[in-house]
Amino acid sequence: MENSLVYTAMVETDREGERLDVIAAELAGVTRSRAGTLIKQGSVLVDGTTQTKAGFRLKAGMALRVEVPPAAPVAVEAEDIDLDILYQDDDLAVVFKPSGMVVHPAAGNERGTLVNALLKHLDNLSGIGGEIRPGIVHRIDKDTSGLLLVAKNDFAHVSLSDQIRAHTVKRAYRAIVIGGFREDEGTVEGPIGRHPTDRKRMAIVPGGREATTHWTALEPLRGATLIEARLTTGRTHQIRVHMASIGHPVLGDPVYGPKKSPYPVEGGQLLHAFRLGFVHPRTGEDMLFEAEPEARFTWWLEKLKK
Image (cartoon, rainbow, N blue to C red; front, side):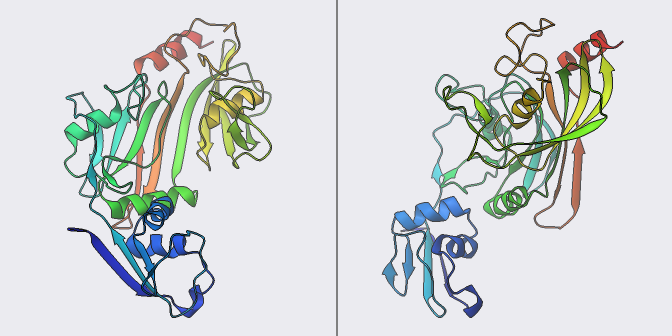
């Protein structure tokens, strides 16, 4: 294919027996899921023969050829939406997502998303998923505010994704949760997956994905507590599910909170991603960013102070 990138290599002795998708991903500098797609599409050759099984076990001395087609333009419009960019360089950007903003366009939310804004404000976008699009490395919920990391090229996307997978990215949140604590800190561990009867909810379920949340009580409030929550994993709705599981749902959470909230919080859960730390993929420098919560969060914090 014209303008495709082609990568070739021989399987080293110490890599014998490994899966094709693992080696192909490393060779082409793409994610493992993207490598799996390329394999299914017939873009990966082993000793000159197309191999369409991602789990194919390689032998030492085999010749690999991975063809990565050019990224296709994404069918999402750029929109001139105000966006707070805390930092950016040629490889990445750190942006502040306000509460109420959806990260990705989807049914019912085709416009006004963070991706629409990024397409307007950033010139170089990652094509790691096979499309020219902003490289959203991780996500936060619509009604959660705070810091998000964006990859501006495939090299950065792979490196940052690997850091998240290795649990080395530092992510800390502030939340106002219902109730008081006897302990100053604690850890919630519980595998998270889809709720068995309500597919719109997540839950702690057998066979779910491993999840760990560390929390620290920062300040007692009237009927609530300001906490810091630190993630070593990043599952969907993780903090909201874990805190609700120990009887302290995030205040304002319409999904995991009580049917009758002690306070009439509007606009969703009072949860804010305030700290983000990682290693710069190109320079190796330790990067750390913090951002204060929105006025809505601060208003409730002041209102509930004893």
